Image (cartoon, rainbow, N blue to C red; front, side):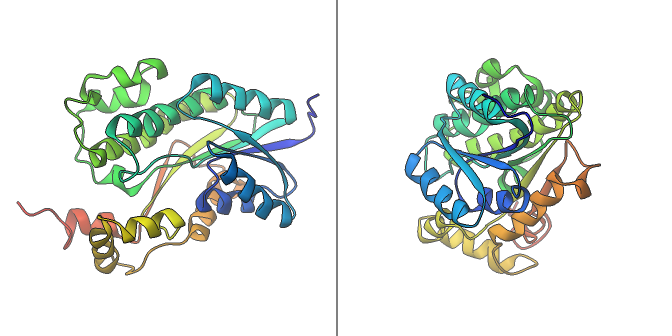
Length: 280
């Protein structure tokens, strides 16, 4: 039976970044921690519960409508959903273009749709996108509009997202992450009718187990060069993303919605205007 007095924060994706945000906004609330792999959610739940948080877990496949709506139903049965942290996704080195578009683009749209229907007044959400979305050249206005507003089930049918045009995983990832920020900008209107807010964070290279794998992999030299040339000269930490997430989800960020916060230590600046700029 639903406890209407219990406030629920839903964390999708059990990685370091999502946990860092949840630690800052989850005190006194119930955190429903969902991941595709139960071993991931169980491990994160153990850490958070031992730190004093009230936790339950669920399995979710964000690329499945039934699975995402089942998660939303479970969250509503626990209490009133006041927060969403969507930190699930796959990277360019992990998956094919088709899988990246299905998980990172369609999956995010589906999560925004489902939780936009149940988020409580005064609630807020954060979607983790990526600096990669900021390195994609400008799209046409109608392409931006399509990524932002196309109904979820038609999203992957957009002509410029077809696999004869999106031929590599990095391009699919960039399109997906650009799509995430555009989608959130549009969803902020719908969430606003419920008195709720939604924003995006686009992190750069953040030291997590996945990032360490990437730095040791075939793209590692490129990532290290990004770090070396950036204005800050180092990678970021999950706690730094957590601090921005807490701002966006808390009262200090109550005037911020539909926005995207790029936090990459200056890598994107170097890409467009510095030593990382593509040579003509």
